[in-house]
Image (cartoon, rainbow, N blue to C red; front, side, top):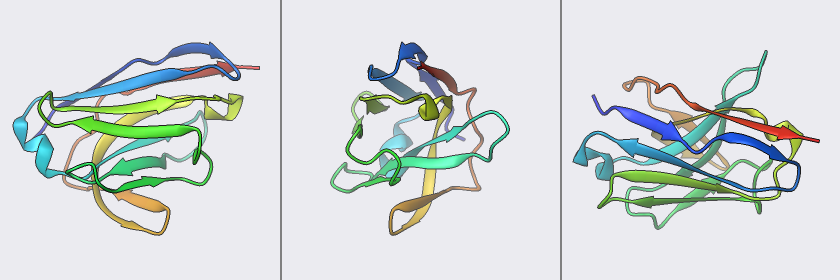
Length: 125
């Protein structure tokens, strides 16, 4: 199983920016459609963004469209999420994870992979 390690979270004021990274342990990373998901306290984990294996297709939840940008580097086995114009409601633990499929602006986590430890993003008002 591919091991995923997220980093780049932190505390930022509303309107600020952060760039999250997710490093995969194996080169098979390049075969997978990958996504970012987040979980706020007391809420279900939700889809944020996804990208096809070659980077040609991207998907965004309506709540982050126009503010977040997903990208990947298959040579470095790394997934990125550039987050701009952050809002307090973006506060959550962010996880990267393989994606099993997408429908419209929603993508679904693969049930065949384990979750990493995530990275905490806190946006103050």
